[in-house]
Amino acid sequence: MSDVERGITSNDTLARLALVIESRRAADPDKSYVARLFSKGHDAILKKIGEEATEVVMACKDGERGKIVGEVADLWFHSMLALTAHGLKPADVLKELERREGLSGLEEFASRKMQEREADGT
Image (cartoon, rainbow, N blue to C red; front, side):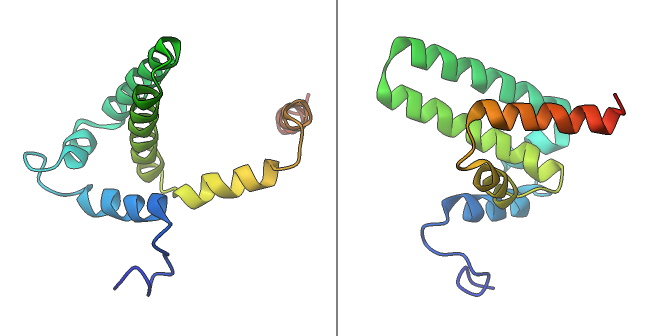
């Protein structure tokens, strides 16, 4: 099935990348970085996310724009592996960001806290 048949436009880089990740998930770990991380289990993916997040912080402290972009790309990529591991897609995150659009950060935070308290019965 082509990207057009799947409803993915040429601008939908995250959706295309998610498809590549899903297709490589069960590939040969000796030939695919994605397959290698999945074969090592969730903790290996989570460790990479932590490493990449730290590298984003350090790149931002250095202030090199190209380095910041590269490190954020690495963080997004590894975060997409975690999404895939949990049966989620970039569209799920984008939908949540759209839901938050127009809310102040403080309103959104307060709303989440209220929902957590209601769920806990407190």
